[in-house]
Image 1: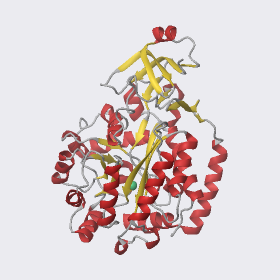
Image 2 (image 1 turned 120 degrees about the horizontal axis):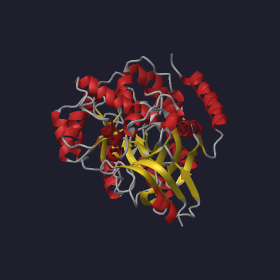
Image 3 (image 1 turned 30 degrees about the horizontal axis):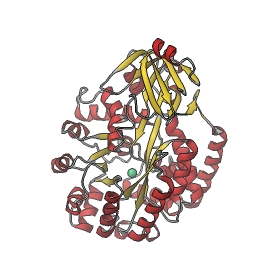
Image 4 (image 1 turned 60 degrees about the vertical axis):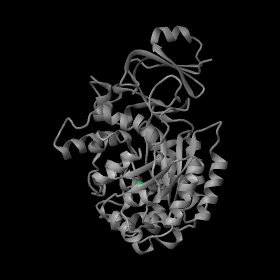
Length: 454
Ligand SMILES: [Zn+2]
């Protein structure tokens, strides 16, 4: 029995660039089971439990965020106009050192709610601050309550004191291994595979070789992903060289932390040799343009990496260095940044940017067989876009151009994740949003009063 039938839709599949007009899509359980002509599918599934008429609307695959720090949502707007060293000392460190389960959960709920509104169905959360136990649990609790697909990348720090890492944030390899095994056992259920657990060293300079090697060994044993901030600017690159004797990419190669399950984040201050290494080992790259512009880190050589065949997916990064959790805004920023920095309007298209937020991002997470495009057999992760809800998105001549350049979260009318309707008529199911936002405001204000260094 089909659970949901979406009919009379225009479907942007991101599957070989196909756009289907007057089409329908059937969902059974958590999977897409049929796609085709609207009339035919309507007569094939007259008893679908729920029928959504998407006349004049567009169905897109759910957007995928390859990099985030959800706890930072509570510090949104406190890091404006700072150089990165001040941002780390005044924003990131005080927040990280004072995290509790309640704060982490509230930040994660808020960040994920904003993500859902912008059409995001999968988020990788790089949870690298652990001043107390069970903070990963708090993030996963929010993911489960909101019914989103998530990767909890279990982050860690074990060094880098000379460059500002606080001792209270450091852990031993044994502690990280114990928590990782616990998280896999508790949350990574093969039957309901919405949550996956990865590793995420906060940085290479903030960790000992012993920690990096131990966690890499476990990542291989569990066949899971490994994501790490790489050369966000010249400064962390120099820190890694001072501590380990090699710059970021060289260190990864020396330690053998290479391969398709490695997702390198930022990659702004990199050279041709680094790009050659990513290509050689089929490593993936998470591009976070809004954060890179906000902190004035620079422009990652994304068109060059794409030309070399490297998979590049989009990420938002934490809201303390982005100030929102909006993938629609990030897609537009990506296109405009690379056009202006190369002085070439043809360097990147709206189609490519959409791929970077969907199928390429899915490849970054090694999940391209499950998500990232609308295809029979894939997970039912998608959103329905209504251009008629705003002047900004009217008229719509090309749905991909409209989504990337002329829309906002206001146009995201329905979001389905794993076959569940998570957002309907622009509102998140099962949550009193206004009430929650007021609570989050109070928690964030109290926290800022306590720990924010002006
Ligand atoms: Zn980050």
